[in-house]
Every structure is written in C-alpha cells, then in structure tokens.
Image 1: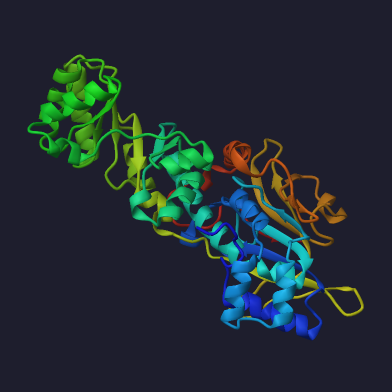
Image 2: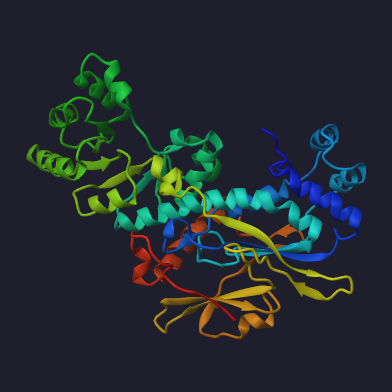
Amino acid sequence: MHTSTALLTDHYELTMVDAALQAGTAHRRSVFELFARRLSGARRYGVVAGTGRLLEAIERFRFTDQELSFLNEQQVVSARTLDWLADFRFTGNIWGYPEGEVFFPGSPLLTVESSFAEGVLLETLSLSILNADSAVATAASRMVHAAAGKPLAEMGSRRTGEYSAIAAARAAYIAGFTATSNLEAGRSYGIPTMGTAAHSFTLLHETERDAFAAQIAALGTGTTLLVDTYDIEQGVRTAIEVAGTELGAVRIDSGDLPVVVRRVRHLLDELGATRTRITVTNDLDEHTVAALAAAPVDSFGVGTSVVVGSGTPTMGMVYKLVAHEDASGAWVSVAKKSAEKASVGGRKSVRRARTAAGVATKELILLGDGPGGTSEGQDSDGRTVLEPLIVGGTVQPGFTGRDGIAAARERHRTSVAELPPVAMSLTRGDPAIPTEYR
C-alpha cells in the first residue's frame, strides 16, 4: 500500500492545475467549501466523520518520484506542472465542523482557503473520505439512539472493502458503538475488539456439546456461545449444562428475534442462568434495533447495515469554489446556478442557534468575512461550530490519532444531546432544524 495519498484523486484535478498554471490563475487566493445540499435518505441530521483521517491524509499528500513518474509516463500534465507538483505542500488554512459534530443541508463542513491550485487538489480526497465515513457515522448514530443505552458492536468487515472496513469501524465508534470485530481497527485506532466463534466452529465438531466444551476450555465461562446452529432451545440448555449458570452470554443469529429472545430469556432464568446475557446479530439495522430495544436483549452486533450507511452509503457531499480574489486582489463571490445544483457563494461562518435551555433551533450560516471573522459574532444566541483544522499548512493538535477519536466521540454525544426530539425519529422527513442564511 502506497504511503503517499497524492494519487487518491481524479484525473481532472491535475489537468485543472495544469491549465491554471498556464493561464496564470493557479495562485489566486480561493475559498472552497465542502457541504451537502440535502441529507441523503431524508435523515433528520448528519454526523461528520473522517475529518481526522483526512487531516492525516493531507499531511501525506506528496508527489514522490513514484507518483511523478506515473504522471509523466501517462502524460497527464506538462513538465512545468510536474515540477510544481514535486514541491507541493498544502500551505493554506482549513476550517471545519470538527469530527463527531452533527450537520444539516448547506452546512459548510470544510472551508479551504488557499491558492486555487492547492485547494482544488484536495477535492476528491476530501469527498471520498468524508462522504463514506459520515454515511457510516450517521447510520451508526441512529442505531445507538434506537438501542436505548444498550451496547452495539460493529461487525461488518465482510460486507465492504478491506480498508473501508477499518474506516467504517472508526466512524461507528465515534458515533457511539462500543466495539468492533475488526482487529486492524483495534490496532490502528484503539477501538475495543470482540468476537468468539461462528457457526463453522460448531459444525466442525461431532456435536454442539463438544463445540461448546472446546470453546469454554479455551476462553472460559465468560465467553459467548452461539446457540442457533441447530435448535435454539436445545442449544441454550446444552450451553448451560456445559458452562454452568455463570456463562457470560449466548448469541442468537436467526429467527423471529423479538419472540426468540423472550423465550431464551425465560429459559435462561428457568435454568438458573439469570446473569447470562443475550446478544443478537442477524442483519440488524436501526429499525430492527429499535424494535428489540424493549426486549430482553443485552447487546447488539450490527454488520452489513452499518458499513453501508443503512441504505445510504454516501452523504452526497460536494466541494465547490465559493470565492476567489480577482486580478486586483479583491474578493469575488462565485456560485453554481445549475437547476437542482445551485450553491451559495461567499465566505461563511456558522453559529448554531439554541434556546435558553440549550436546544438547537436553527443552523445559521453567516455570509461575511468567513470563519473566525467579525460576522461570526453577530448572533449571540448560539454557539460557534467551525474550528481551525489546518493553519498555514500545519494540522492543529487534538483532531487526529486516538486523542482525536476520543474527542470526536464525546463531541458527538453532546451535539446530539442538544437536538430537538424530532431528530431521533427513524422515519423519513425534514431536517431536525432549518438552515438559515444571513
């Protein structure tokens, strides 16, 4: 796997730089903005995830001899542009919604201020990371709320690409999941890992009893036994006979779960295993989790649904030029006018308006002098949202690595808590709060 991230981009990003260098416009100061025109899947709110990964990727956005040789062989850009790329380092400023924060239509999730050439090169990388990770985090957030405080584990590695699985585990953890089955996610990000045995382990042995005995011998009575390979009721009885009433948990991966878990809980209690927990898997999503939240389920394992954004695998984010300096050095607002794809030009800052009780009421997008400017202080009834992520090409502390993940996890908890109750609805509908431009 290459360490440079410079070619994780689209061909036309480089040809635009090539043409702009020849035209003399490549170094004009510009402002790019990453946002979603609407919330995909008619969700009530979105969750920002992937920011820490993006910042780390920007630090590795370098054109080494390998990348330059490829571009030269494929004649993607001119020799002059190859020389410029050889010295490329992002030297601009990036403001953004910090990871774990919630967002709404039009929210400027990233504001990139740099030369045109530097800013345009980050378009594809920014979108590919934030679109995917935020889709996972948004779905995971809904599942966490639906679980009503019961823990969820991410176990969808087999339903997505091998590296996407690691990113998905990270995004789900930020949104409130408690563990992952993916060991690389555990190593890379410090996420707690979990897992015991699959049906193949039971089928390997002569009997279910032999399989349970082997697992108990290796992992102890605190393990979780999978009891639905053959007959669930008999599986529960065998599990308690082998492990005793101190068995840690049983896992159910099939059947009419609301009915089955009640029967299993009754049977465990009848057998004296009153402290043995029940965990369920079986193609769960936020709707099935919500349906089971009141059932005697102790924890959930979610696979396919969370890693594909529960049917919304991308957040539909775009990256647009919204302002640039003209030949005289004056700032000019620019915006796309296409039907259904219009954007709002200009430098922007953001405040989230709240009631006296701290409940969010609207997303205020303020047109003016940009993040940190005087326009940001014009509305005193809310909190500022944008934070400096990169200043003068330097990634700011607190947004990357394990510390960044911990901060994002806590930030998500507090930002969701300030949303109005309608935000927690699992039905399709309008965003929980409106977006207002001033």
